[in-house]
Length: 302
Image (cartoon, rainbow, N blue to C red; front, side):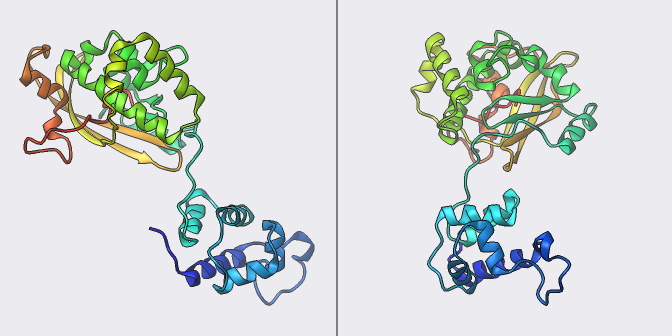
């Protein structure tokens, strides 16, 4: 939510300035007011002290994005604090240029802690699998350890991995391919200058007629919940509730697979009941009661 209240914006600037430590050269002196002076802060930000003063007093026009970036750097704001500053200034927060390559240590500990409970995977906004716990590695088999430049990318695997039908059934694999093409479109729109994504798109376009067919549909993926039928190596076919959690600061997606044991034969292509069990589109959030759904967010290595 964007704010147009200049008073809130000015108050936030004053609080951040008061929380900053003064330069080493003046720390020994006694100041009546904590933090930096306006002149010191404006020097760090590279803007005039007169303009900065008007910003704090709520008397200046809406600041530009360049000024907001300069203030965020001067204050040493975290991503969340910077985004708050932008919203108070009446601007949308900046988009990250690329997903973070490093997973939070606490999240990695969570994955290991759930080894004996449920499969858990983490993929980034470019659809590249970053990590999975032992339970997910067993469930996904070779799909969890793809090799090559694009081998760990969900969208790439959807059109190149021969093991997909064994994991999802024929119909489940087909629905997943549809969803993967839609998710790749979302990723490309979020990171339009990403060379890795454009290279993968070019390769899939060149080698996969199936990918070209799904791409021409123009679908965009945005699902966070689904029900999926998957083949477990030691348990046979099982139903999983899939939930996705998003770390927006790093653009990492955590996928939780909650298993519900199911017995029965492997799904067959063309079998409507098997297709429903494999992908369960009617049970996906927002599209119950017989309404036809758009593609579900990919719900295997992710």
